[in-house]
Length: 75
Image 1 (cartoon, helix red, strand yellow):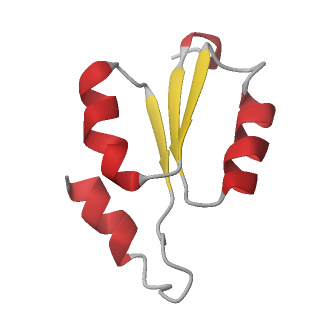
Image 2: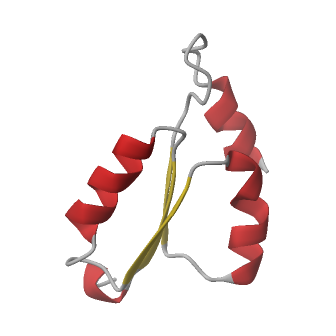
């Protein structure tokens, strides 16, 4: 797959990360969609075909197990 034709979804609770990734990838990919709320993952995936999903593993600052990301990945 050519990255220039890719639709990328980035889900992270840190708006600075979302902004940085979007700035980094916007000239390299067809489209970069960012979302702060992981609960929007299923509706976003249902509404559009994404070639790549970049998913944060920890959505709560006090938890660093990665279990949150695994939970959303399984969904």
